[in-house]
Image 1 (cartoon, rainbow, N blue to C red):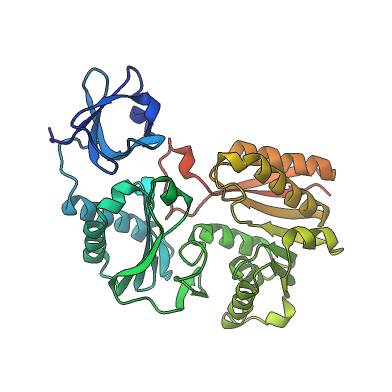
Image 2: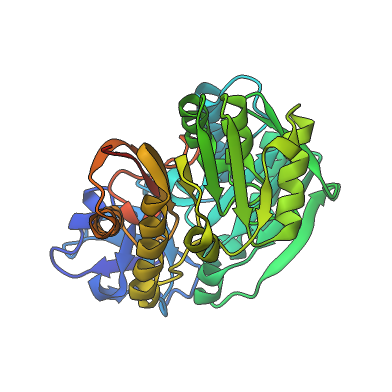
Length: 395
């Protein structure tokens, strides 16, 4: 047995961990031994003393324990991190499309490292640290990443509300090797995109939508397409390559719009034939009189936490309602939410309510999720932040 401090659970509270959920909440904890502090590794034990798992401990957070491994007799050291990174890399080699050079290498709990996200862009890695447990082992983890992946450089972008909840300040800096260039050209599904890993949203690109963009491409032949919250135009470019007659992209950021136009051109398409419009999406949907065969809604997260859910639900309902009103008879809607606090059941209820208010009857074609290089624990619904629906309206 390892000599890590022990976290003793209340009677019966080990059930979620045994069922595959990687978290234990503070209310499940009966006591600890040796006074562990935030970020310490502890051995979670059932009330009767049965060892269950090793993980990060935080005495002042709602999530008191985040599981690392069920191997309770090992040490969590450099060898442990290197083994995890090699396992994650081997999985990506099996599941990624041939020719792609951008993907998620580590997806937090889905790869057994809660609080760590690592994305690969060509020869560079971009990492984000979201828990104090990873923060305290940052140098060891960076060294293991460099040893396994051999990148030219590693950029850290540790930002966002999850980090603040752990009591950590935001940080953005190159932590190993060369600083990444201002723009990195990546390949996805045979298309080229120029990614700003320093200042772009998330780590620079929405890698989680890879497979969903391919689905949009396959459905776009001969259609007029509206891409709302288009960002740098990845869905738009995919739709154009799929044979869409006309694609209209709408985003409030002119910098993102310029990138969208550039992405159309670098992939050999006529940007003038596919308008990129700077506008508030809510306003655009209310004011346009054009009907579209296919509308894509991929908004930013409207709910950053559970307190925002009611307001977010109103926002999601509004944009879906207005989109149903702008769909041609028999049209298709691909609608997404990346808000963790809005689960699949609530999102489906919102979309159904919007269709009812618009007087449209829906056919469900498929449910969307993140690409497989963003794995999640099956029992960890909180990890499935990206959800979406592909629906068609009855003519």
